[in-house]
Length: 266
Image (tube, rainbow, N blue to C red; front, side, top):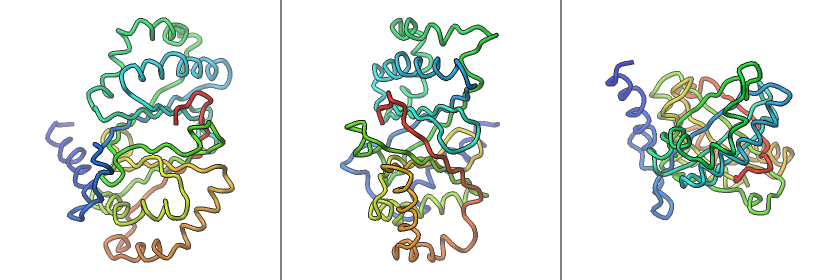
């Protein structure tokens, strides 16, 4: 793809989306800068790969990312969704250069290389993973920083919902991002969701799309809160705004339920 085309269709459109196409977005909380998120998806095969990947992420990758200032790092197993077993890794940073160069810096980290030896040097006949996919996101202007669920501090029971919304056009994508800034964040919080992050995909598959994460004490609470959200009068009012309902602004939704790994920092 030509550089000019990439900038116009990708980063430029995303920047427009995050300001809500002329709509004033909520200010960054406490003056904090907006984070970038690397969302990595490890496709695994049942058997030794799962244990090998867990050990690698827990004892080698997350500590090395933390040494770079990338924290907290989330690690999640796919509980409900396609392609199981899959391990998701979420790495936040306000410094884009740090995030995108992390893989290169790992190669110079001797502590990491020693801890990662079995994973990095797995033979082709018995690989450590099947494939890895990555998406780079930028936090919404109205939710600039990842927020830890209350249960994380005590390693309490919690589940996560990872939702991605694709749109048929950049215009519709911009409108959907604007809808979050127009009230969806607060409705989620009001009915009891634990909002974790909201991000606009800059690089990845199936663009234009946005991804956000919510957390709950358990699946029953998740279902109850979504019922409360759908019945909330502020949501019903927002859903009738002409800018958001003149046509379907979301063409496809991916909805996954994740369980945090024992070593997850989120």
